[in-house]
Length: 76
Image (tube, rainbow, N blue to C red):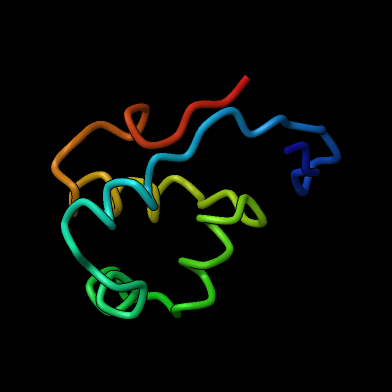
């Protein structure tokens, strides 16, 4: 799904594995949001490709799931 970054560049979001990881651990969106210090709406937006997290949040997500950022988010 393409969307526009603040700098005006179109980026096509290739893959987001966060929902799969979350569901495999039987964690709700609210539980994940609380663990990451964000709102449930942020989790919903990431999982539905409406929002691309900035690096600090992407890093927290990767640490939470104990994997690399690029294992969760891939861009093209």
